[in-house]
Amino acid sequence: MKNRTGQLAVTMVLTAMLLLAGCSPKPSTSDVKNAITAELQNTVPVSWVGNLLGGSNAKFESIEIQQWGDYNKEEKYWPVKVRVVGTAELNDPFNPGKVKRFDKISDFRLTKDDYGMWQAELPGGMFQ
Image 1: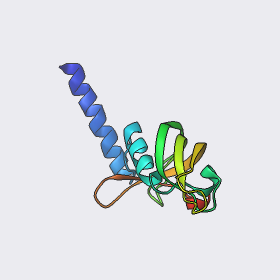
Image 2: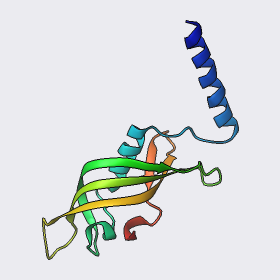
Image 3: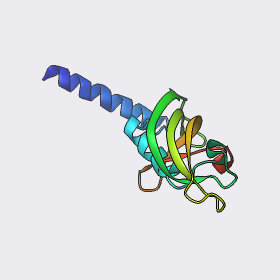
């Protein structure tokens, strides 16, 4: 019981320090994966699939965090370098239904929306 009380106290102190520093708590691995999946589901970057119109209907084999950056206080985001492996359908009217595989390492920015949900953003957008 004593050990649990100590752990709770440490957690409360760390949370208070983050709030005072204006820092959002770091998202969990599952938060990162869910946010990236949502971001890329219907908008896969041009360079990832080698098509000027990009890709959509992404299917993910793996999403692996490679590196965390420091919290950006000014713009309020967590930078994270992620390796994303999967497939996407090309948005190409000349090749309907064609599927392309991707295996990319990219930098994402993780922020919370107005409802406290994590969102991922590719700084370069569709033209990475």
